[in-house]
Image (cartoon, rainbow, N blue to C red; front, side):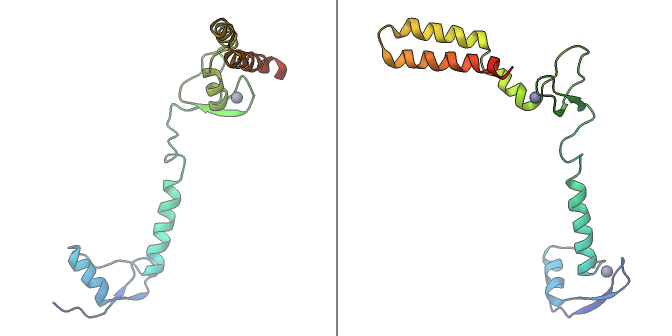
Length: 142
Ligand SMILES: [Zn+2]
Ligand SMILES: [Zn+2]
């Protein structure tokens, strides 16, 4: 089968463009039965807008359940995947994650445990001191 360059009319801008033999071969191999409808610039333009649309809020995974609110800890604007309950603190992702690490009380307990387990082991005592410092850090920030 032989292909010859063909002149087609763009459906978007009405301009003529060449449907090259190579492109026809490509279409033939892909079993596309329809001729291309648009010239390259128009095709690129459409692809461009399509890309922008896919980068929109919908593509970002912002569903209807996302609620815009302020973080109770640091005050920055954030979105949460649920409807915040009145009076309940809402945390941004960062604060939420830092809240997931052992709480101050847990850290102190862990430090105490470390000291108990450590006995004379200087290495373990050092870990305990570190945990205590970590536990005190949130207070220093206020
Ligand atoms: Zn065009
Ligand atoms: Zn926050």
